[in-house]
Image (cartoon, rainbow, N blue to C red):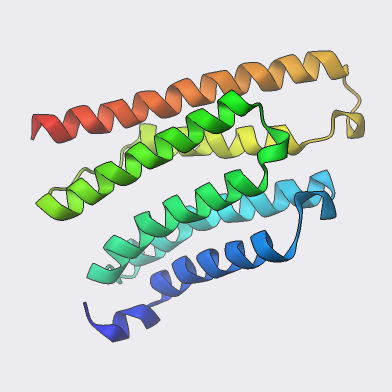
Amino acid sequence: MIYKDIFLLPNLITLSRLFITFYIYFRFEPEDFSSFKLILLISIIGISDSIDGIVARKYNLVSKLGIILDPVTDRIVFVILILWLASYFNFIFLFLLLVREILVSIGGLFLLKTQKTVKVSNKGKAGTTFIFISLCLSVLDPGLMNVNSSVFVKFVDFFLIFSIFFYYFVALEYLYKLIKK
């Protein structure tokens, strides 16, 4: 790894996402924000997860550092965000998300050690998007909308269950591709 790679725009985006997430985690409580601001914050973190890779590929700024830094930062940022927002989730949902992140991290370490690669699929991107939508729905105050609270809660619960199943399905698909290689 070359030290100048740290100053490539995609790596700066990745590191910024990491440092901002740590800052928010240690400086604020989720209750310090309105539902709207929490959703905006979660969305920005989710979108920035994609921007670094898009910039790297579009401007031919892919680096060895970025190949390692991006997925590690993705895991760290996501776990910090989940822990920070823990009060909004059912324990089982929180537990399943954290277990999956631990398993994916172990898989990532295996990939680094064996120097194998698994291409990110559209299903993987969709799974991540569903989870981020789930986070946004979980922090949304149904009182701000003109909807029946119990119907909204049931919808959110259904969406959380669907998202977590899909998220695990994608992880198992990656595992299958890895074993098949």
